[in-house]
Length: 336
Image (cartoon, rainbow, N blue to C red; front, side):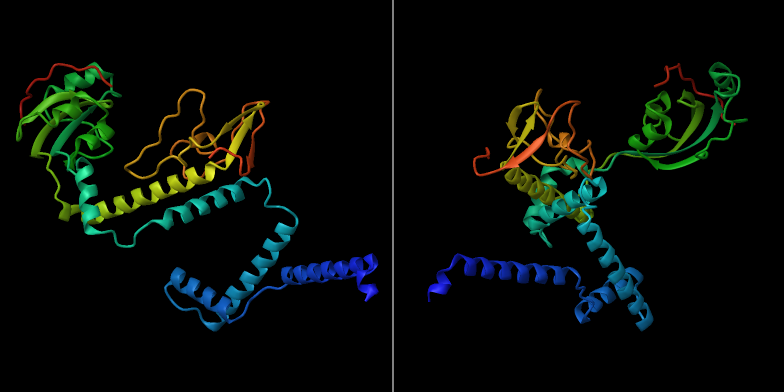
């Protein structure tokens, strides 16, 4: 069969194979599956979103919307609209992070692991001291701070309106500092005697005369009281560590080229930590942390690879790549 050995025959057969393969690819591109499985998936999605199964017209509308979106999506891909699109880029990065996090996330962590995690981070679950009190507020906006203090020294009468009210319940030191600033008042709330009008004390807003109605000390939490919260924190920590380890393995395949100098990414540990346990490691001078590769501090969604003006960044992969207010004296004011 000499004809089988002819180069022209080989060329024709190869061309035919390429033509058939190309036609199959083109045919698949213009074929959208809207069959029973897809309709069932859309029905489940509708149920999860609205809490009720779709009627037939609602399901038909959902299928029509799916087909329309799929057509536009494929046309967009064919036009290359996904390239150089920061929103698309961020979404892809988010999805791979979610995938990596879910790899080692246990559905129901062992009780021993929860107990060990609680013991290691117990101070996080201890309760702060709390204070309940009522106040009379004298605003510094009316005649200045000195005038407000003079009015406050007369006692808890004739005060001004305070945006947050005049009575507070179970306010913690953190809450007091957030509300009044790290001020004389914030400190006095946790040291003044209970049951008597005291002050005036200064805050960032003016002067306050207060009466402590209740104060509770800090308390060590027991595991059973906060088990659900501990379990949630534990799972978040496991997911973050899985993400970090997955990124570390991926990063060993890449190197960054900036202004002609090449450096590996092996030292990077992944996105800035989001779990309540681990925090981002500060990079040493001259190195780039994961935050430098498009992740702002504390950001969930990475941005573009940042480069200095005139620099060039390229990632190449291959087997050879290296793996408050001034304190004022306080006096006891006459009670009304």
